Length: 231
Ligand SMILES: *Cc1c(COP(=O)(O)O)cnc(C)c1O
Image 1 (cartoon, protein in one colour):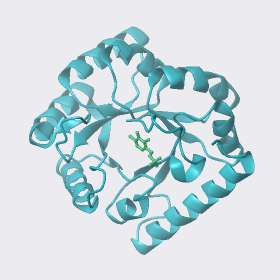
Image 2 (image 1 turned 60 degrees about the vertical axis):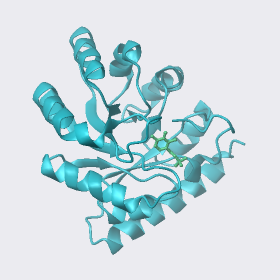
Image 3 (image 1 turned 120 degrees about the vertical axis):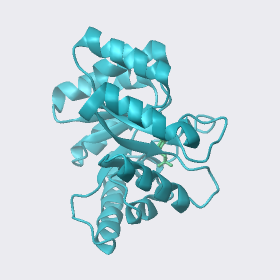
């Protein structure tokens, strides 16, 4: 199901056009939104096609998969930026710190501990976003709504300016807009500049609601193998 390189280039142009349009309609500055191209389950060749088409920011769910695909590409494209967007196990924290520029899925104290320790060991720390489970779905990653304030405060205290913002994945099949609004107001309350929200199905609406990062996979790379839909 992998798309040809030229198709990936075309799809990227299409998504960039939609982003530009949504940004303009919202009256936001033209550089207000960064596109994170979500390449999970797609081969390195697909990432290379996107790189050829000028894309530099990528998102992956799994540390292992990201570690297999990205270091070689990074050697060729030093300005490549990798976001880890999937639920993160504490035993993967050190490798995550080593390979990522941004970790979007900080969601619990045990992971904060693991990341702080990994940062000490590696001598560096990626930017961090707190993932909020805005739909309070039991099967999902993310800090529950009622704990979000306190967890964000603690994360700020611990990580300082490395804590850049918030991320959410609204419940499938629900109107995402109330979730986007909740995330935006929570970020504003905490003075956090980054709001990662919006995927293939809803990124123009997320931009209307103030997204600064949109995470788009299917609309760029095509469908992922079924059964591996993946978060
Ligand atoms: C897979 C994934 C995306 C991309 O989803 P698409 O619907 O393919 O655009 C975005 N964010 C997260 C956290 C994901 O796991």
